[in-house]
Image (cartoon, rainbow, N blue to C red):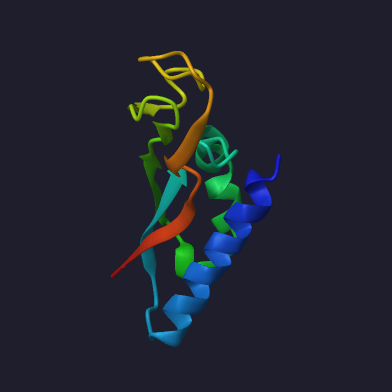
Length: 114
């Protein structure tokens, strides 16, 4: 369960950014999590309150998430499709030969503050 360590790093980065910019309180943190990143958003939601527990700048902060679709281009027929929905197989020709176009990212997208 590597979501906890990645979440810690994201919160630390948000705290450092707040400190560097004279922000006293973070009201929310937005993460962009790709479907193909290997991270499970449910764990970020579950552990966020614990990660921010002893961090005054994050007191009462909320976690927002954007889920980026795992998109691919079929190298056989050129069709674009969602890898997760199609279970890695092109819906047009059935090939598993693909180029991943998106959905692997994990980003600290936004820090909201008061």
